[in-house]
Length: 194
Picture 1 (cartoon, rainbow, N blue to C red):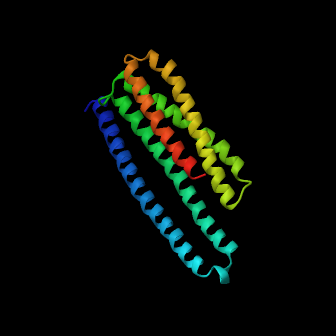
Picture 2: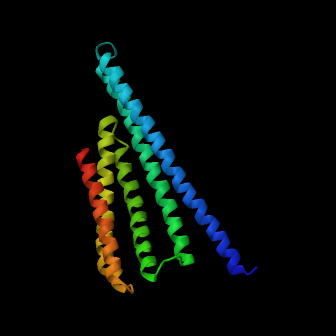
Picture 3: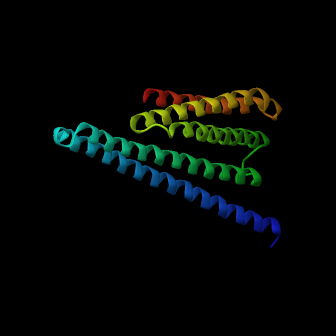
């Protein structure tokens, strides 16, 4: 067997493993998220019935702890999925599976924007550590909005600079514009929660 064929087999297996990991991660996240949402709903019912005996402050603290768990779960999921998708795109780019040079350039831009997002989200979240309860949740949401805005700025700059250097600038610009639109919708969802 030639080295290229062995490399192809190895990359195919790695690609399949990553796709399975992505599917498994999505299912685990969905299950854990539903469990936490159910706990929050149950706690709301339980503590609203006994608010006078238990006290509003205690009930509020319990609900906030569940909401913080939900945010933590979401952050871990986003980080894990970003890592898996990045690895998958790099493998596909290396192998050249249905990917043109423009697609590789687009993937590189998107991966770079995600890495920038991770960098910003970490720095913004460090500022949130001083807050507690609802204030901390709101701070995390604002941090996510700021990080997403930075990612959009990077993508807008890439449309003008990076896409111009690809073989298919129109396709590159359309794909990046689609990503910007998707991120803008995420920002609006977070703004509704503030």
